[in-house]
Amino acid sequence: MAQHSYPGPTRRSVWILVVFVITLSGLPALAREEKGTTFQASAATIYYEVLGSGDGVPLVVVNGGPGFDHTYEHVSSSWEVLAKKRRVIFYDQRGTGRSPSAKGQTYTLADQITDLEDLRAHLGADRIDLLGHSWGGYLVMAYAARHPEHIAHLIIVDSAAPKFKDTIFLFENVFPEGIERQQGVNFAEEMGDKAAQDSDLREYFSMLFYSPQNRDKFVATISPGVYRKDINEAVEKDIERFDLNPEIRKFKCPTLVITGRYDMNVAPVVAYKIHQAIPGSQFAVFERSGHLPFFEEPEEFVQVMEQFLAK
Image (cartoon, rainbow, N blue to C red; front, side):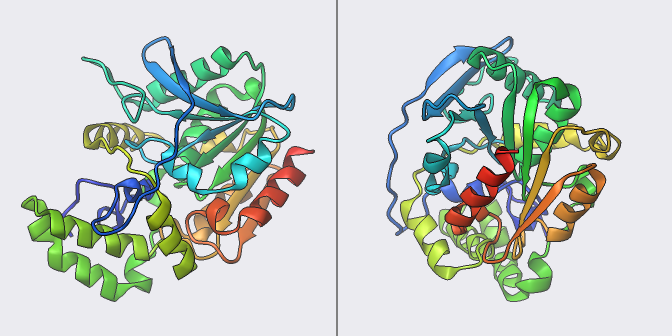
């Protein structure tokens, strides 16, 4: 199938779902007030937001994409609960959301690692707990390979494979009728037809959640987001040359690998292989979740996280 201008199943891309933060026609959106600020990193201006003020090790959450902002993560109630004991930090990756782009700015994996390291230093935290979701999972593995001394705990949630081409997508095998419907609007979408794009997005959305109720709730409450196709393509092109498998075998920090049992965007076997490769890592499967276990099973997610972070 022809590639789309956003990271959906028709593109065989693991990068989340945040495409859903684009409000779909006819569905209401509930905006959430952002309370963050920006700082000047070494090569970019980065927006970040802090929840909580506890004295525990701060938890930095790295969103999926690439090319999207962090706002989809706020659909979950998990973070506010976790923030009772520690600061929970979100940020927009360079050029996305409230992190402005600049002329001549590059978007490589090395850039993303540098921005994350600059954020850690700006927070004044020698060590952080680091969680990455989807594309963010790949990024935190790469960061951990470069800066292991700054990680207290590492959490990898529904991540792409350490070698991206090894990522397994299940859409065609589980939702053949949905893929067929997407194919039916592909030409119109490539021609710029907004209705066709909305139809494709709706179809993609329907394949990411375990619960239809959670699916509908997500669409009805998410606020509009920003997608940068050029950033998505630049980052994705760059990471295709890397293989993190030899690196993750060296990890010594406590690591938790999480997957939703019904994640069609990244088959659970991908998470299991990451777990097998990282010495001493823990593996958690959320039995009633798709690609967003922190949203579909928030109480269970918090319990698993608190138990892990207490070690």
